[in-house]
Image 1 (cartoon, rainbow, N blue to C red):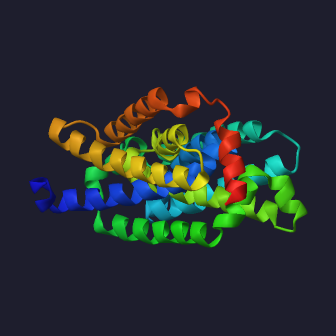
Image 2 (cartoon, one colour):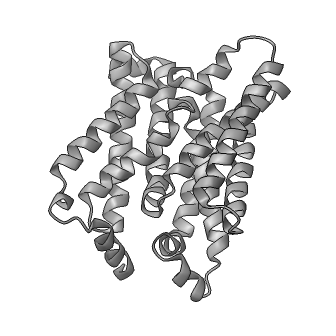
Length: 281
């Protein structure tokens, strides 16, 4: 623990802790509702927002949040209208936003180390301003989840019934997409655009292997998210390897271990059990 005497490691530790919690909480809804592909699409879409930030000289995290939100709403609007399926809408926005980001890079006239840090992750380069922005957005995401906990739970398992009971199911769906977009952008500096969707999905998928209730899945997801983020950070420091990749690979090891020990191997209808228990809650 003596490495925490360094300021850059202290900032990296706090950033990893924040991301481990927020990604794990939002990831539970993403995994249960089957939105993993949208998560991957939003991760790559945020690249265009980061590039815009560098082009106009504004904070890349803030520009990426706005860009990712617009992309999330665009995916939701396109798929909700029924003109194309959700995965098709994601594919369209995935390709268009990445192409837009590459186009913006061409306008920057030169190689930018900071820009490519967002592409591959640079946890040890997290600044104080990055922490303030990440902390504020993390607080917003977690507070929103607490306030709309039951409503988000309802639309996750049965959006048609939620709409029938009078809940604004469409608005809640857009809210969930917005939380996904913000969470993904928060994680860019930690693991990079290429790997960020994995940090949202893997801890929740690991928790799913060991849970029979929604609340247990949420708690286990947070546990594995924090353990993966902090453990990966320390491993990467001592082995002098990429921190983002190490965090994701650590989370992946936990997933395969949980899958091997999962009681769901003997009870394959795990999602139905969680759904029925969530309704009981």
